[in-house]
Image 1 (cartoon, one colour):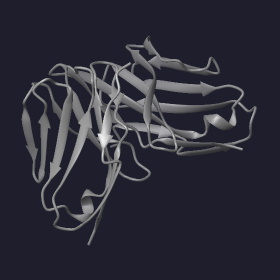
Image 2 (image 1 turned 90 degrees about the vertical axis):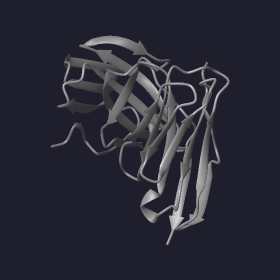
Image 3 (image 1 turned 135 degrees about the vertical axis):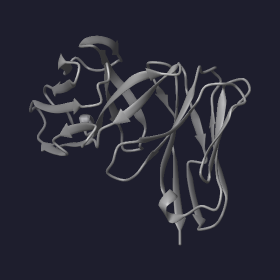
Image 4 (image 1 turned 30 degrees about the vertical axis):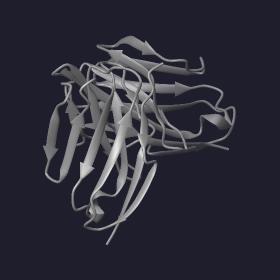
Length: 108
Length: 114
């Protein structure tokens, strides 16, 4: 069974700080996706990484796929309250396996 | 224009009842899914349909039965509801893109069984 462990589980920071969320597995994935979920809503896709070592940037968010395609990270620069939410990584092809989630709280 | 819609948003019912959740997508996607998110926010796939054909059926009790009348709709019927069925159920749709299936989720249905 493929598992995706995320760390940390919970992160509470002040506006303007930087942070990194990790997504790790012992399995190789053909691609990894990152989603953000806000309370009362469904997850929203942020990015998909498909090549080992790939780095993608989305404004203040930087996503990296590990060289061996077993892990990924999400780095947020100068976090803002609007970044608050549950961040989920997900791997797989047609059948996605979701990570354990990281709850981020950014306070003004 | 809502891409993936679900009804109802909230569902409160008693043990033993039968209930249905409806889902519709207007994205033209071929594949639709049902996911269950538990109280710890863990999201797990239940079923997937591709062009009305069941392609993924995880270890889900037989009380759960999905139905896809056409590729834009995927409904979930639950018989004999149990307390442990309380969760948020998400419908999603996807289309293969660049070697992966990117999911578009509905707003969720919060099911509470009392």
